[in-house]
Structure formats: structure tokens, C-alpha cells
Length: 112
Length: 115
Image (cartoon, rainbow over all chains, first blue to last red; front, side, top):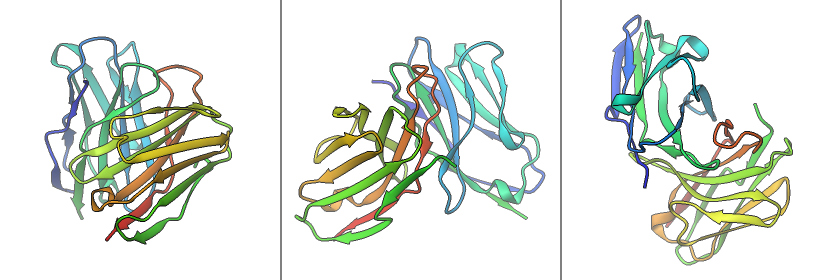
């Protein structure tokens, strides 16, 4: 079975710091990759997605992610975080049908 | 936000009682999903539906059943609730147009506590 690992469970940063959240998946074939975010008290929403083409994808709110096939990774980055980025972030992978496998999530706290 | 509502939003129940959670969408999307969210586990798929009366099991389907009699409604039933089913339950929908690349849109969640 496919699995998705997010190694950082909790991250605390100060405003303006750079962010990188790790995501690794186990499936070796063609995959579609997503990052979702859950702000406090809000629905999960998609930040960005990768299906094919340029492995560096840009999403909403200044986030980007890089797909490195050889490392089975899809790390999320943001050059300068804001207090409003405090949320839980989930990496998700699709390799068949319309099903998603989610990672365990990373809770980000940004201190003002 | 996609038109997805879940009811109830909060529920406390006792072990052994039946519980039904409802997901309602106004988007006319083909696919509907039920997930549970637990700390450290992210979201895990319970069941999904790819059309009226067409459903299938997900990763953690034991103890749960679903029904979809109309495009807009997807019900999740715990036949006899157990404390291990205490969780936050999310419904999601997707168009089902582009297999594998569809974005899933999530509802607000239902917090269920089984005492």
C-alpha cells in the first residue's frame, strides 16, 4: 500500500523566517501530488498541485513545492512566513482512480 | 467555498448506539468521500462514492457503512459506535472529470465523541 510521510509534526517559526516542510511518498509509479492546508477553524483547502511538467509548482499565498522524482519527495516551501500562515499542512498523493493518501500532517505555528 | 454542508457539526453519543452523519453538496459533483482525521494520522479514507448507489471501501472502513440515494447526499453510519470512532469526520467532493487530478473540496467537519 502507498504511504505518505511528513517527518515534521510540529514546526515553530518566527515571522519572516523561511519554511520548508518535508513530504515523502512510497509509490514508484506515476503520481499526482497535492498540498492541502487547514487554517484554525476552517475547511481544508488545496494549496497547490503537481501533475506533470515543471517540477517546481507555485500555489496560493506565496507557497511553492518542488517534485523530486528520484527522492520521492514533494517538499513545500515559502521564503518568508507570516503569522497568518499558522495552520496544519497536509501532503497528499494520488496514484490510482480518484483516491488520495494523506500524510500525517505538520502543525505550523508562526510567532509574531 | 464549495457548497458542502455536514450535519450535525458536533455530536456526543454513547458506546453501542447507532450514529448517522450527513454530507450534502450543491455542486452536483460525481464523487463524494468520507474521511476521519486523527492526530498523527492525517486524513484516512473511510468510504467513497462514484455515483448514486455506487460506493466502495477505503482504508479504514470497518465499523462504517454508507449510502448515496441522491447525487447531493452521502450518509455515513456507525452501526454501533465505539470509543475508537471518536474523531473528526470530513466529507469531500470532487468532479470526477479528470481521474487522479481532481481537486477534492472539503466540508467543515463533524466532531464525534463516543463515550
